[in-house]
Image (tube, rainbow, N blue to C red):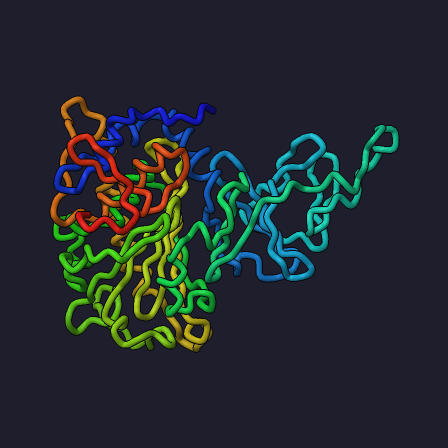
Length: 407
């Protein structure tokens, strides 16, 4: 595919202006299949993408799969306890090896076509009737590896192996979540959705609460919608910051109250706040005083996106008698549905010839930064980091080199 983004650079430059003067991404960014094809290659395949949690494959022989751009990736827990990533394809005739989202492969992985057999470390162990193939070297024909790293229990892959080490890619993001001890949390709930909206519309919606009084009455009762917008300094491909819980609330649920203890070691000042981070390209992380919620997004079509929502709690809480995460899950399941319907209405209207493109409100500084991050990424041909955002004024561009104070 051509490395040049199919969007007009002039349209992208207008997004990079200071918020007061900026315009949103052009409608084509949310509608054109050619744009999504380009994003799959340059945003998803060329970046570190979250594909799950380490607990998805806890024991040797456990396997799970993930779609990353146009590729299928196989994550395998080896006999040595190491989680490795491979392209989900047999080296013989290109057969998809595993079609289940998760399975167990005790000791080996067998191709369902011609029974070529691979070890959990990717080595080719057996290939029948190959004696007559000249130059065939079983030792050199194993599963193709995919760079795989973990952070705080999340598993990331980079299928092009061009994004550099994960920690360098993330910039200062790991320091923002260290105190929540996410690596020791365990999943207690999971919901999967398909929304009829572009993945970037959903991402932008996640990072603003301008819409909250209109569509989220339950949410605005437990968190003041104007308490957001206090974005933290980002030195990586992420945006976000805290919102306050309403007085008398200690969690996000219908009642706003829980008897669950806060996450162990959480500072007092964080027990009355919720932090919302978007890590490009596909992970949203919501850090609550007593649990962590994530959304991972996978574009299916320009106007159709798969979203997986998960709830993580401290392991002693999950294993305690009578544990019930229903208050958190039911609350966010309700809010998620409200968000998806709102985003679907945007998708229906954004392509209208009657839509000329709005401006960013005083409450949309974060989504302006996110939109600018997308715009800079289109121009760079890869996911950019916040310090790379160039703010333009009167047609002149300058590299920010710091957190843009005007955003």
